[in-house]
Image 1 (cartoon, rainbow, N blue to C red):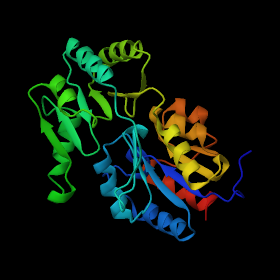
Image 2 (image 1 turned 90 degrees about the vertical axis):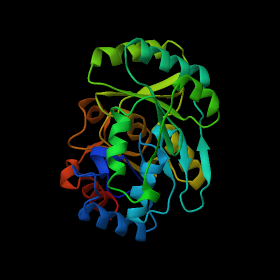
Image 3 (image 1 turned 135 degrees about the vertical axis):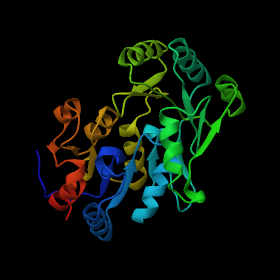
Length: 278
């Protein structure tokens, strides 16, 4: 039953098209609502498909001193203490199969560690990070390593790779890769946008990450709000006591949500916090 009488103790937010506006900034309205919730002792958590160091940039702007869920739940890490609370290193065989499938379709697979994007060419997702870097101070930039062999990187960076990503406008190619990587039986596959495909180990998703944090903090499911906009947010809004879809969210997410808030450019996150937390 939907109610605003629950004493919510944790609010988990996706970043792109949820917390961030069209300029990839946190609006004054969202920032103010988050600050008020923090004063009440509410745990504010960012949960994103982005690389950890990218999410960290935004939490520092917000002054949020709580763990960051990055790479769709493959890592949970505290910025202030630098403590890794959880991580799931992508199986080598999965990374190599993903690379093989991408190359078969003429696409470039990208690999993420917590702070580095590995690629054989600056294209699509690495191009976006590269362009974003130009606007940042050196200490805030994402490490992008262009490598001669992405297959060799799997071995050289053993124990570091969290996620494999491919981005392309050809939905048929992405569907082919998705269908075939799932045949390994060892992966979680999701999309945060229609032009990307994200691969983690089986069982790894945002919902699982929230469950881990809730157990650490002793917070019940019904004391958690989760807010998102896309397929990779479904697991977390299903886990949370109050699952919220953005007004701009995909229909598959809205169908699972307990509540639909405003669009990302209408301070939809702030609307939820003011209605159910403050």
